Image 1 (tube, rainbow, N blue to C red):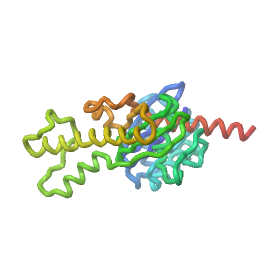
Image 2 (cartoon, one colour):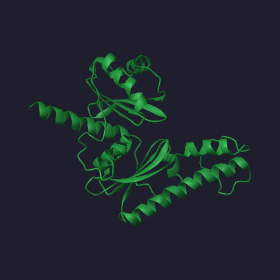
Image 3 (spheres, rainbow, N blue to C red):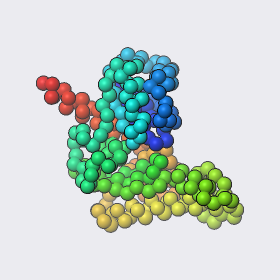
Image 4 (cartoon, helix red, strand yellow):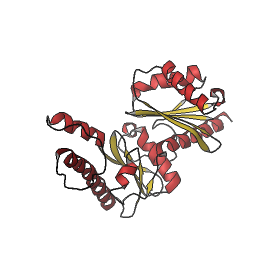
Length: 262
Protein backbone atom coordinates (compact mmCIF):
# COMPACT_ATOMS: atom_id res chain seq x y z
CA UNK A 1 0.00 0.00 0.00
CA UNK A 2 1.07 3.55 -0.75
CA UNK A 3 0.45 6.46 1.61
CA UNK A 4 0.09 9.78 -0.20
CA UNK A 5 0.28 13.06 1.73
CA UNK A 6 -0.64 16.33 0.00
CA UNK A 7 0.05 19.24 2.38
CA UNK A 8 -1.35 22.54 1.19
CA UNK A 9 -1.74 25.94 2.78
CA UNK A 10 -5.27 25.19 4.01
CA UNK A 11 -5.56 21.40 4.40
CA UNK A 12 -3.43 18.28 4.55
CA UNK A 13 -4.86 15.38 2.55
CA UNK A 14 -3.90 11.80 3.42
CA UNK A 15 -4.81 8.96 1.06
CA UNK A 16 -4.03 5.25 0.77
CA UNK A 17 -3.70 3.67 -2.68
CA UNK A 18 -3.86 -0.08 -3.22
CA UNK A 19 -4.97 -2.44 -5.96
CA UNK A 20 -5.40 0.39 -8.48
CA UNK A 21 -7.82 2.44 -6.41
CA UNK A 22 -7.96 4.85 -3.48
CA UNK A 23 -8.85 2.93 -0.33
CA UNK A 24 -9.47 6.10 1.65
CA UNK A 25 -9.01 9.88 1.41
CA UNK A 26 -9.05 12.08 4.53
CA UNK A 27 -8.46 15.79 5.21
CA UNK A 28 -7.26 17.71 8.22
CA UNK A 29 -6.63 21.44 8.56
CA UNK A 30 -3.07 22.64 8.09
CA UNK A 31 -1.40 23.56 11.37
CA UNK A 32 2.35 23.89 11.10
CA UNK A 33 2.92 23.00 14.76
CA UNK A 34 0.88 19.77 14.64
CA UNK A 35 3.29 17.01 15.66
CA UNK A 36 3.93 13.60 14.14
CA UNK A 37 2.26 12.01 17.17
CA UNK A 38 -0.88 14.11 16.72
CA UNK A 39 -1.06 13.20 13.04
CA UNK A 40 -0.60 9.53 13.94
CA UNK A 41 -3.44 9.44 16.48
CA UNK A 42 -5.81 11.02 13.95
CA UNK A 43 -4.65 8.98 10.94
CA UNK A 44 -4.50 5.59 12.65
CA UNK A 45 -8.03 6.06 13.96
CA UNK A 46 -9.28 6.65 10.41
CA UNK A 47 -7.31 3.68 9.08
CA UNK A 48 -8.97 1.43 11.65
CA UNK A 49 -12.40 2.73 10.66
CA UNK A 50 -11.62 1.71 7.07
CA UNK A 51 -10.13 -1.67 8.09
CA UNK A 52 -6.69 -0.70 6.79
CA UNK A 53 -3.75 -2.03 8.76
CA UNK A 54 -0.90 0.49 9.07
CA UNK A 55 1.53 -2.43 8.81
CA UNK A 56 0.45 -2.96 5.19
CA UNK A 57 1.56 0.55 4.22
CA UNK A 58 5.06 -0.01 2.81
CA UNK A 59 5.65 3.16 0.80
CA UNK A 60 4.91 6.85 1.21
CA UNK A 61 5.26 10.12 -0.67
CA UNK A 62 4.83 13.69 0.57
CA UNK A 63 4.10 16.74 -1.54
CA UNK A 64 3.91 20.09 0.19
CA UNK A 65 3.98 23.81 -0.51
CA UNK A 66 4.46 24.47 3.23
CA UNK A 67 8.11 23.66 4.00
CA UNK A 68 7.63 24.17 7.75
CA UNK A 69 5.12 21.29 7.85
CA UNK A 70 7.49 18.80 6.23
CA UNK A 71 9.45 17.92 9.38
CA UNK A 72 6.44 16.52 11.28
CA UNK A 73 4.95 14.77 8.24
CA UNK A 74 8.24 13.08 7.43
CA UNK A 75 8.65 11.94 11.03
CA UNK A 76 5.10 10.58 11.01
CA UNK A 77 6.18 8.22 8.23
CA UNK A 78 9.53 7.36 9.81
CA UNK A 79 8.51 6.93 13.44
CA UNK A 80 5.02 5.48 13.11
CA UNK A 81 5.20 3.57 9.82
CA UNK A 82 8.95 2.85 9.64
CA UNK A 83 9.08 4.31 6.13
CA UNK A 84 11.45 6.85 4.61
CA UNK A 85 9.04 8.84 2.41
CA UNK A 86 9.77 10.28 -0.99
CA UNK A 87 9.66 14.08 -0.88
CA UNK A 88 8.26 15.51 -4.11
CA UNK A 89 10.55 18.19 -5.54
CA UNK A 90 11.64 19.55 -8.90
CA UNK A 91 14.85 17.50 -8.62
CA UNK A 92 13.08 14.15 -9.03
CA UNK A 93 12.57 12.47 -12.40
CA UNK A 94 9.21 13.84 -13.52
CA UNK A 95 9.46 12.40 -17.00
CA UNK A 96 9.01 15.79 -18.65
CA UNK A 97 11.01 19.03 -18.98
CA UNK A 98 10.15 22.06 -16.86
CA UNK A 99 10.32 25.10 -19.14
CA UNK A 100 10.59 27.92 -16.60
CA UNK A 101 13.44 30.19 -15.54
CA UNK A 102 13.88 28.53 -12.12
CA UNK A 103 12.21 25.11 -11.67
CA UNK A 104 12.84 25.21 -7.91
CA UNK A 105 10.43 28.15 -7.61
CA UNK A 106 7.48 26.22 -9.04
CA UNK A 107 5.09 24.93 -6.38
CA UNK A 108 5.27 21.16 -6.39
CA UNK A 109 1.46 20.96 -6.46
CA UNK A 110 1.51 22.66 -9.86
CA UNK A 111 3.97 20.12 -11.26
CA UNK A 112 1.91 17.28 -9.79
CA UNK A 113 -1.26 18.62 -11.42
CA UNK A 114 0.53 18.85 -14.75
CA UNK A 115 1.89 15.32 -14.42
CA UNK A 116 -1.52 13.80 -13.66
CA UNK A 117 -3.37 15.91 -16.25
CA UNK A 118 -1.02 14.82 -19.01
CA UNK A 119 -1.30 11.18 -17.92
CA UNK A 120 -5.11 11.20 -17.88
CA UNK A 121 -6.14 13.78 -20.48
CA UNK A 122 -3.11 14.49 -22.74
CA UNK A 123 -1.89 17.95 -23.69
CA UNK A 124 -1.97 20.68 -24.65
CA UNK A 125 -3.73 21.58 -21.41
CA UNK A 126 -4.54 24.36 -19.01
CA UNK A 127 -4.89 23.08 -15.45
CA UNK A 128 -6.82 25.38 -13.10
CA UNK A 129 -6.48 24.66 -9.37
CA UNK A 130 -8.85 26.45 -7.01
CA UNK A 131 -6.84 26.43 -3.80
CA UNK A 132 -5.54 29.10 -1.45
CA UNK A 133 -4.29 30.64 -4.68
CA UNK A 134 -5.99 30.08 -8.02
CA UNK A 135 -3.36 28.76 -10.40
CA UNK A 136 -3.41 28.26 -14.16
CA UNK A 137 -0.72 25.89 -15.44
CA UNK A 138 0.17 25.18 -19.06
CA UNK A 139 1.19 21.74 -20.31
CA UNK A 140 2.19 21.28 -23.96
CA UNK A 141 1.32 18.39 -26.26
CA UNK A 142 4.41 16.46 -25.11
CA UNK A 143 3.64 16.87 -21.41
CA UNK A 144 6.25 19.57 -20.71
CA UNK A 145 5.42 22.10 -18.02
CA UNK A 146 5.45 25.58 -19.58
CA UNK A 147 4.63 27.94 -16.71
CA UNK A 148 1.37 29.62 -15.87
CA UNK A 149 -0.50 32.21 -13.86
CA UNK A 150 -1.03 32.70 -10.11
CA UNK A 151 -4.02 34.70 -8.85
CA UNK A 152 -5.42 35.15 -5.33
CA UNK A 153 -7.83 32.41 -4.30
CA UNK A 154 -11.44 33.44 -3.82
CA UNK A 155 -11.32 32.81 -0.06
CA UNK A 156 -8.43 35.28 0.19
CA UNK A 157 -10.53 37.82 -1.69
CA UNK A 158 -13.48 37.27 0.65
CA UNK A 159 -11.26 37.82 3.68
CA UNK A 160 -9.53 40.86 2.18
CA UNK A 161 -12.86 42.48 1.31
CA UNK A 162 -14.15 41.97 4.84
CA UNK A 163 -10.98 43.28 6.51
CA UNK A 164 -10.45 46.29 4.27
CA UNK A 165 -14.02 47.59 4.27
CA UNK A 166 -15.46 48.22 7.74
CA UNK A 167 -19.10 47.91 6.72
CA UNK A 168 -18.77 44.75 4.61
CA UNK A 169 -19.41 41.45 6.41
CA UNK A 170 -17.59 38.16 5.94
CA UNK A 171 -19.73 36.08 3.59
CA UNK A 172 -19.96 32.54 2.31
CA UNK A 173 -19.22 31.73 -1.31
CA UNK A 174 -22.03 30.62 -3.59
CA UNK A 175 -23.63 31.27 -6.95
CA UNK A 176 -26.01 34.23 -6.63
CA UNK A 177 -29.52 34.02 -8.05
CA UNK A 178 -29.05 37.26 -10.00
CA UNK A 179 -26.09 39.34 -11.14
CA UNK A 180 -27.58 42.56 -9.76
CA UNK A 181 -27.65 42.43 -5.97
CA UNK A 182 -30.37 44.45 -4.23
CA UNK A 183 -28.66 44.43 -0.84
CA UNK A 184 -25.07 44.28 0.39
CA UNK A 185 -24.58 40.53 0.78
CA UNK A 186 -26.10 39.52 -2.61
CA UNK A 187 -24.07 42.29 -4.26
CA UNK A 188 -20.86 40.98 -2.66
CA UNK A 189 -21.65 37.40 -3.63
CA UNK A 190 -22.30 38.47 -7.19
CA UNK A 191 -19.07 40.42 -7.41
CA UNK A 192 -17.03 37.55 -6.03
CA UNK A 193 -18.64 34.76 -8.04
CA UNK A 194 -19.04 36.50 -11.38
CA UNK A 195 -15.78 38.35 -10.89
CA UNK A 196 -13.99 35.02 -10.62
CA UNK A 197 -15.86 33.62 -13.60
CA UNK A 198 -14.62 36.65 -15.55
CA UNK A 199 -11.09 36.09 -14.27
CA UNK A 200 -11.16 32.40 -15.22
CA UNK A 201 -12.55 32.95 -18.71
CA UNK A 202 -10.36 35.97 -19.38
CA UNK A 203 -7.08 34.33 -18.37
CA UNK A 204 -7.88 31.12 -20.26
CA UNK A 205 -8.65 33.11 -23.40
CA UNK A 206 -5.40 35.07 -23.12
CA UNK A 207 -3.36 31.90 -22.55
CA UNK A 208 -4.89 30.35 -25.65
CA UNK A 209 -4.06 33.40 -27.74
CA UNK A 210 -0.47 33.37 -26.49
CA UNK A 211 0.17 29.63 -26.48
CA UNK A 212 -2.22 27.61 -28.63
CA UNK A 213 -5.84 28.21 -29.67
CA UNK A 214 -7.10 24.69 -28.89
CA UNK A 215 -6.38 23.41 -25.38
CA UNK A 216 -8.24 21.16 -22.94
CA UNK A 217 -9.18 22.78 -19.64
CA UNK A 218 -8.89 20.65 -16.49
CA UNK A 219 -10.18 22.05 -13.19
CA UNK A 220 -9.36 20.76 -9.73
CA UNK A 221 -9.73 21.95 -6.14
CA UNK A 222 -12.74 22.07 -3.86
CA UNK A 223 -14.42 25.02 -5.57
CA UNK A 224 -14.15 23.69 -9.13
CA UNK A 225 -17.69 22.22 -9.13
CA UNK A 226 -19.12 25.53 -7.89
CA UNK A 227 -17.48 27.56 -10.64
CA UNK A 228 -18.55 25.02 -13.25
CA UNK A 229 -22.10 26.27 -12.56
CA UNK A 230 -21.15 29.65 -14.03
CA UNK A 231 -19.06 28.69 -17.04
CA UNK A 232 -18.85 25.96 -19.65
CA UNK A 233 -15.11 26.43 -20.08
CA UNK A 234 -14.01 23.28 -18.20
CA UNK A 235 -13.57 20.09 -20.18
CA UNK A 236 -12.86 18.00 -17.08
CA UNK A 237 -13.26 18.40 -13.32
CA UNK A 238 -10.93 16.13 -11.36
CA UNK A 239 -10.91 16.41 -7.57
CA UNK A 240 -8.12 13.86 -7.18
CA UNK A 241 -5.68 15.35 -9.68
CA UNK A 242 -2.94 16.27 -7.18
CA UNK A 243 -3.22 12.95 -5.35
CA UNK A 244 -2.87 11.08 -8.63
CA UNK A 245 0.12 13.23 -9.51
CA UNK A 246 1.76 12.12 -6.27
CA UNK A 247 0.87 8.50 -6.97
CA UNK A 248 2.33 8.63 -10.48
CA UNK A 249 5.48 10.37 -9.25
CA UNK A 250 5.90 7.78 -6.49
CA UNK A 251 5.54 4.89 -8.93
CA UNK A 252 8.04 6.49 -11.30
CA UNK A 253 10.53 7.17 -8.48
CA UNK A 254 10.29 3.67 -6.99
CA UNK A 255 10.86 2.18 -10.44
CA UNK A 256 13.94 4.36 -10.93
CA UNK A 257 15.29 3.37 -7.50
CA UNK A 258 14.76 -0.30 -8.29
CA UNK A 259 16.61 0.00 -11.59
CA UNK A 260 19.49 1.82 -9.88
CA UNK A 261 19.86 -1.08 -7.40
CA UNK A 262 20.02 -3.57 -10.25
